[in-house]
Length: 153
Image (cartoon, rainbow, N blue to C red; front, top):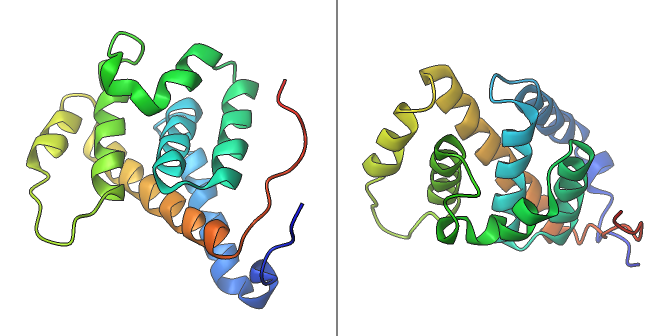
């Protein structure tokens, strides 16, 4: 197992603790822990963050999430019967905010789909969850945060 490039948590403790605080707020948000973890896992898959995928899949398994849903998360659009309409709207929004194009992109369709399932507060909480996991992914990837060697159960 490799060590991180730099002790990033201790070199910038204010930023690190601030990001931890945002993540803790997301975990306690009105979205519910399973939806938050699904979003964090999907965004981490998109960004290729092995450390975060491993961590959030483990958290989902501890919460009772099935292997079937975890295995199909990256292909959720192909299996709409596996994920609720609310989860699909959240996943589409998370992907939209994660895959920002170089030019202007209209996200009205994804945003309007959210309105059918989420309150305004929940939409903002969801957006903060996406923003924070993208930040974690970039730090973990950039600093080479190693994946633990604990086997999955």
